[in-house]
Image 1 (cartoon, rainbow, N blue to C red):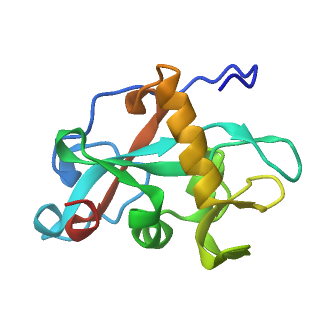
Image 2 (image 1 turned 135 degrees about the vertical axis):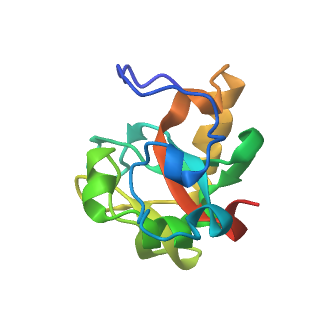
Length: 154
């Protein structure tokens, strides 16, 4: 999928260190039981043009867990919404993660960073499949790490 965009993102190996030892984009690291209950995951965004305003936005398509295990956004949306403040989402080019309505119903979704239009689950899955079919890798989409509850990623 070529949008004619030049995107510079941090590319790194899947996270493997405990939450206390990695630089994360958002987390409360004051808890002593953080390592046991939480795991560091890589946040993956896929740049694209918003269907409504046509500006470039960076919706989250999923996370990379320990050992490079991919979890799609729909599986971790609730944990990401509870962990990542809107200011952090804005820094990575993503709109708020919140309930939005689509033709198929209401669900937690990405929003456009410019106009807050829903960046729907189905179109994002299709765009991710096209990106990978064209030779893109999940590591190409890594923008940072965040600590999430272990049950969300294991």
